[in-house]
Amino acid sequence: MASETEGVMNQCARWSSAVSSEFKRVPPGRSGAMRMSTRVPGFLLSAVACFAAAVTTAQVPSPESLAHAEVLRAEALAGSNAMAIVTSLTTEVGPRLAGSEAEARARMWALNTLDEKGFSNVRNEPFEINAWERREESAEIVVPYPQPLAVTALGGSVATDANGLSAEVALFETLEDLKREPEGSLLGRIVYVGHAMQRTQDGSSYGYFNEARTAGPSIAASKGAAGYLIRSVGTDSHRFPHTGALRYMEGVPRIPALALSNPDADQLERIAAAGKSISVHIKVDSAEIPAAESGNVLAEVLGRETPDEIVVIGAHLDSWDLGTGAIDDGAGVGITMAALELIKDAGLAPRRTIRLVLWGAEEVGLLGASAYRERHEAEITQHVMGSESDFGGGRVWKVTADSQTEAGDQLFAEIARLLAPLGIAPGSNRQPGGGPDLYPLIAAGVPTLRLHQDGRDYFDLHHTADDTVDKLDAASLDQNVAAFAVFAWLVADSDVSFRAPEI
Ligand code: ZN
Ligand code: ZN
Image (cartoon, rainbow, N blue to C red; front, side, top):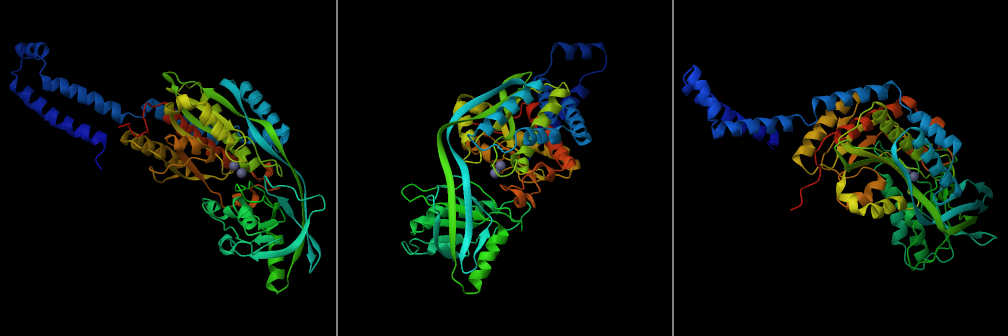
């Protein structure tokens, strides 16, 4: 498809040949010069206008803007504050479960840190949630080979009664197998679903495999099950079970649900493969805390020309309670905060505002993302673009965006050109999706850009007690910071709209 610039330049070429032939008709000397200055032909005015239009289009972004982006990229690679930020968060706050006192301390940490760094409009936007609290959990094989199992309750799981629950296990290799089971066939049983997640670079299989965690408990309960076990939605082979939110369906009994570590799931499957029937005892104590407080923390670098137009970058501030939430999502907090800090410390004010959002209560159902959308409804159309970092600390290898305009396509190409030296290849520019907390904004038509990270080891650690800061690599975080700083700067310093014009 011919670009807008090409179209304008072709038009210019036609006009400029008309101009030169007109000049040829003007005799040299004073009278000719006078004639040109007093009676400027219409086609020449058109030519000037067209030249200006071509220059404007061709210079998005401007040479100055591109030069700033290159400096930001170099500065990030020379060493950003990302590692220091995530180390501070995970050390001084630690785990920060949505709606807990620890998540409140994380918001205080964020407000203090952002204030110290000198950002504009640093603020907390509180909202209310029904929080969940883990208290106690255990499981053991009772028959045929008594032994303890490494388990963790899924987020949101109801408690068993104080004595726990003992029952025979019904094993299913996949969630599909469980779905095909007739209603009422699993009365009183504890269901186990294997559904082993596979390692991928982009983590794309998570959406498929985590259905065993999110929807599985209610599917099992709808067939009569009294308890639910899954193989952890994770790719490691350590005795660290992976937690994560479940979603009970309306009108189906709520049953306790736990995840086994991968080696413990292997153990159960090995015993079953030998033809033995298995009974386990599970115990969960947990609590629901209604009307708990969560919040989103915001900070900005204000735009110099159109401050009402907003480029959103960010990460989620809450984490699961087992580890210290370094890869999920302390890394994202460090990357995006450090990127904004680089831009601010360079003394650069982009045309538009860059807003950092540290969302609360992501893990328990994107509650901060919904609260943000609701609170900022009036300015949603002013959101130029959004991107969240929520896939650990691995290096970025691909960039995609959801551009809905030709000008957006051109700016995307420029962004990709500046990201290429970081080892980042351009992917589709017609692909929405810039992180989970952007879903409500995407639904409202906000264009997104995604910096895809290498996540081959992300699900080794994700939602486990092993998610700690020693797993992160500073140079890899800096590469992410470079990418975020380049993209956020270039989009914010332009007047390009990525949104399809309203018809
Ligand atoms: Zn996350
Ligand atoms: Zn998570």
